Amino acid sequence: MNEKPKISLVWQIIIGLFLGILVGFYLNTHPANNAWLIKEIFQPMGDIFIKLMKMIVIPIVFSCLVVGIAGHSDGKSMGRMGTKTISYFLCVTTLAIIIGLVVGNIVKPGAGADLSSMVAAHVNTLPTTQTSHGLGHIILNIIPDNIIDAMAKGTLLPVIFFAVMFGLGVASLPKEKNEIIVSFFSSVSEAMFKVTHMIMAYSPIGIFGMIAVTVTNFGMESMLPLLKLISTTYVTAILFVIIVFGLIARFVGINIFHLIRFMKAELVLAFSSASSTTVLPQVIQKTELFGSDRGISSFVVPTGYSFNLDGASLFLGLGTLFIAQIYGIHLSLADQVMLVVTMVITSKGAAGVPGFMFVILSATLSSAGIPLEGIAFIAGVYRLMDMPNTALNVLGNTLAPLVISKWEGKFNEQRYQSAILSIKNPTQSITNHSSKP
Image 1 (cartoon, rainbow, N blue to C red):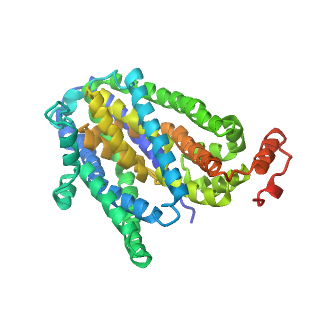
Image 2 (cartoon, one colour):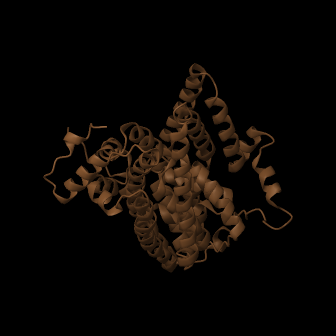
Image 3 (spheres, rainbow, N blue to C red):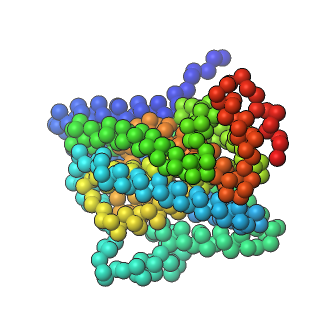
């Protein structure tokens, strides 16, 4: 019996988005009796999705951080190369977040619609950053009195602090005990990924409800900022590659455009599929062909898939400000500094799971007191922005092992020159040089 072709989740979300816009437009232009539909039908649809997203934030962030820290903190990663790798990842992803926030402040993609009245009763403002709440007070609030209570209340930074401490503690255990705990939390994180898939299966319905409510209340003009956000995302990603990656590559003696041409097949696949995991083996192999040390590529690339998501980090800053702006929420400089700290930590768990960026974005918005309902605006068109971000992630994790190899003095110039020749002359084989030290 022939099976009917299934509609992909991406298309389901897009269909939900456009149906929500159409229904909302109709109700906005025919206001009779729409109050009951919003209150009893569409609003609960969206609220269910938001509550489901809130439900998984704490367990998935906690388990991923423990596995990421304890699982990568063996003798190799705690050595010189591991320290350099993590330091490089932290610097680049932090820079990406800051650039995203800077672009968001300059371009203001969400400034075209003020939806603050829609969620006035639900907005939790950021803790004040006046002198009565200085740095010492903020640090004290990060350290939990009771981790169970912090988890129950969904206060993210104390949970992150405890997860980091716990992960470091697990990393210091003997290998046999460490493996048991890491295996347990790895299973927990995998189970939470399954739960994420379940929630994402409902997401088209939730997005339909939230968008229908939004357009009903505010009309079609509320959709206009999305076009600005999409175009801003593409332009920012391109500039990040040319300026940031270009300068890093030039600093270590590599031409970023040569690297892009060498990796064009993998970048196109990552862009079109919006999945970086599909090209992980190729990235490891081709960075070695481009001159990286084999051991460094084998360590840095997989680690980068958890710790070095430059495209995701770039979008975190931009997307968070976009949602704050569409609700008319002003974030001071001090507030945004705290957001950078939160994003740097939470973005380290966003590896390779469809829809997981929504979880990370939810965690960031929750810590900032920004309405999670704003995710509905991004969700319907996120695939369009996820494509360049995924390609940016792959390019960042291609550049990283080359930088570390240069840093460690293990870069193979012979393989690099062979790779350059293969770019200029596609018939030139580089296979014969790939295994040479």
